[in-house]
Image (cartoon, rainbow over the protein chains, first blue to last red):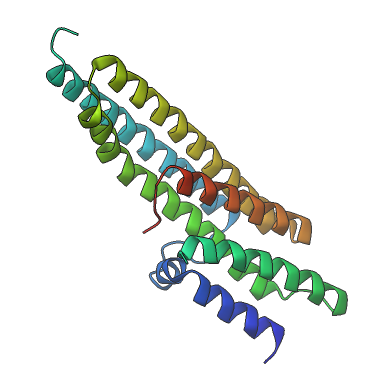
Length: 68
Length: 130
């Protein structure tokens, strides 16, 4: 078996989750610009989600510890 | 052995094989692209996993606290860790972009290191990849 085949089989065996994502075409063959755009989108979504999560946690905290 | 751990080991082995193959004629472009693509997918999956993990984790911190001060401290500590993971995601992505652009072994090694650091941060905080 040639080295390239070994490497490809290795990668596939090593990360089932990654192979699964690639099969779904989630991020297969991204260009640098597409990868940068995916990062920007992820950061924006994360910022919005984290702000909402923080607010919800604070609200729960206020309800659990009234007057503290 | 977790998939993320196996991935790191795989990256290291790939890097080693690429170094070896480079000596005898160069690491193939398709193999390199597969490694970079796997790293990019792992990084994007890490971002999704972090977003999914955050809300329930913050609620569990509040639920487990016995005072408001303890809850505040727990939330602040987690949010600091969360920021570190976000920085690691950015670093890994930038390294992947550099590896896609530069086409040399040094950029591939930097990328593997950045992804390994990201996976270590996730593991330390209990965030699991899907």
